Image (cartoon, rainbow, N blue to C red; front, top):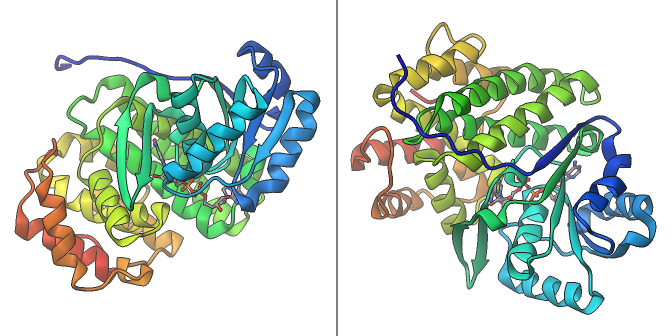
Length: 355
Ligand code: NAD
């Protein structure tokens, strides 16, 4: 029996595969972009130069100042550069920080935005934009934020350091986990969530021992794409809200914060979301039918043992984080209770195993 559901899918046009970068000129033609500003971080200039060389005269310039959490000052500067150059398109090549800058420019200017992702964060598949100004991060959702086209070239992921590959891959799994118990979940999103999680669980351990395994790389990028669709199409809950709160308040790194909090948010919600947990357990290796056991086993296998304290969050921050987390209510399978949420944050802070 299926309960009533609603299904709305938002997605850019997607091209996926190995060696797909050479399709960029024809993809730009399809979105009527003849002169583009290429965006990257200072660490990925050489990748942006590869893109520039590939599209020749269509590359107006490279803007290299993409920054984590999309500061509005950087966006204003990039918009001015785009206007001075008179470009008719944006190409972002990089992780969520660079894609975020592309979205921020596109929503302000109406320019088409083609993404070439190089991490598993999934921002390229969402109509969501988080921006920071005066130390405050605000997030908005607007269909116009969704990129125009996405080119997944799995080869570009091979330079991502192994630890970041693992953290970023788990970040993607977190989207799928919360999609399975989202208040507006539907059977299609559940399929994507399970398939995405399965692909990542198969690929990540292989990449950890052989970072150049191309089949495992394909699997993980494919999984991240599916998980990104989950993030873009249904509402996230406790896990993502906590990551947002803690990341912003204690300046914690994005992917690592998601990794640390995921098992604890999952364990907190498990009693209130038995069907979601059963679906998740069915695709987590070594779960024996128990999703929390499965996620703990995955972490042990990948050697993940991190706490928020490792990233500079002070112990007194546990109470502060708990107060902030409870001050802004949202839909979550299990009601937010002070004692349980405080213990969740404390365990995540200390780096203890979830239960
Ligand atoms: P990131 O984009 O900040 O990248 C981290 C570092 O890794 C950067 O220095 C980057 O240049 C480098 N890097 C990226 N790919 C590489 C590769 N293949 N090889 C070598 N180096 C590489 O990290 P992220 O986790 O992808 O993104 C985090 C940001 O994205 C946060 O600001 C987060 O809020 C945002 N985000 C937004 C959404 C959304 O839907 N709006 C979704 C996910 C993440």
